[in-house]
Amino acid sequence: MRHFLQAAQQFNTGQFNTGQSGTKGYSLIELMITLAIIGIVAATAVPSYRQTILRNHQNAVLNSVLSELHFARNEAVKRGITTVICASSTLDTCDASAFTRGLLLFVDHNDNRQFDADDIRLRAFKPDFTNTQLAVSTAIQEKIVYRPTGLTEESGTFTLCDERGATAAKSIIIHLSGRAQASQQDHTGGDLSCP
Image (cartoon, rainbow, N blue to C red):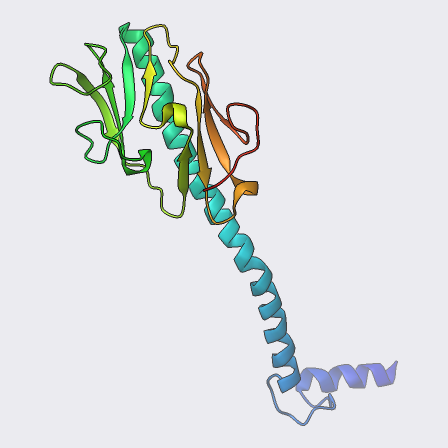
């Protein structure tokens, strides 16, 4: 017991010999091990973080387009008149551009599927398709028409792809009933393909 008390007293006064030469710090081996661990963690975390960023952006684009489709259908039923969502590069007229350049949503008073002076523009927006590709099925290549009953004239699929390829692709299916839904298949039930 006496030896234990002497050792404790020496330790408290700083006279205890720890076997080190009195230098403080880390050895080169300790630093190398720490850097190796940091490198391994970074190598596994960065690709996972990139996948999360891509997935979140894809979901944001999907939700914004889906929201516009729901709005167009609701307006057609609420107003009792045809509404149209068309591809528009200028956001002022329907044109043969891709939906990625912009979408124009309007009330089609004369049922000609074109935005005229007597039509009411409800919304126009350009989704952020950065790092995301949009493929559109042929039936709805330039426009989607909602009748006053909420039905559409054609069914089709918007497919959203990014650098992860078809395995990570998502789609928006537009049914003849007018209902738009997010999916991982096309409107025929087939697998998605990316351009």
